[in-house]
Structure formats: structure tokens, C-alpha cells
Image (cartoon, rainbow, N blue to C red; front, side, top):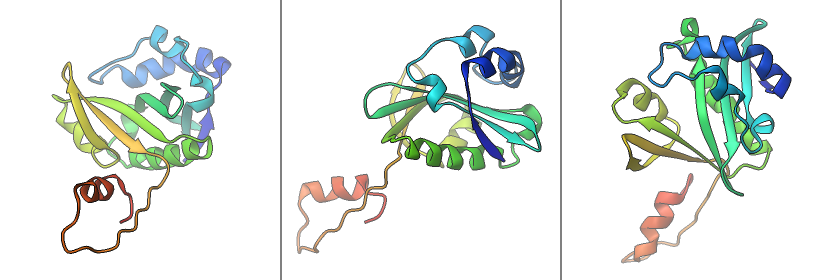
Length: 166
């Protein structure tokens, strides 16, 4: 699988195919969703190809200076449950990390157990709002070292929770 950055021209050409990828999902996108302008969208979004065939799309934009939002990650119907999403997510994290991203967030419908179980592999669950769970993933690795104490202080637990490696 090869990740290719999405351009405005690419989106105009491929929007209808992307709409087809979403048709049977819990939150289908229309052509206008794909063509909607978002901050840094064309710099941060990617398409995945396998053997020259478009198999998945990720739409990402900048939410704030240090936070980026994954609006959509969708695979072609014939490519689902075959590991495409997992490989795509890992490559997406690496590509966004190279672009200087620090935090990636996305929302998952709490009623959609299949999507939720997939996305839990890649992020931490946060607040629930309007039937969606906010998921987060730090793109920069956090390592913390702590000298053992007899009785750890309260921030010890926050440090341990925030670290990728402890």
C-alpha cells in the first residue's frame, strides 16, 4: 500500500469514487463534504493505493496549532476487514508526524461497536458528546522516567497515563 497526498485537483476528480466508498457507512459523506475547504486539508489528507487502485482515503485538517482532526477514514467496500485500515492508520500517523503533528483527534459514534473496536486500537477515548466519543492519539512519542518513591505523588499517575513509554 502506498500513501499519496491529496490535492484539490485529485479531490475534484475522485470525489464521486470516494462518495461510493462511504455509501454503506454509518456516516456517509456526499460530494460537497469531500470538496469542503478546511484548514490545511490538502497538505494533511492522503489516499491509499494498492496495485494502482484507490483503496482508502483519509481527510485531515488542522483544528489548532498543535491539534489535527481526522474527519474521515474510509476504505473501499471490498478492502474492509482485511487490515487495510490498520496499515493505513499506521502509515498516516508516520506521515503526519513528519509534517510536525503533535495530536490527532477524531470522533466515533458510540452506537457503532464495529468502528469503535477498530478505533480503540489507535487512540484513547475521551469525552462523549452528542452520541460520539472523542478519540485522541499523540503523534509525538512521550517518554517519562520516574525515580521510585515509597509513596508516589498524585502527578505520578498523570505522568504514567500520558506517557507512551514509562
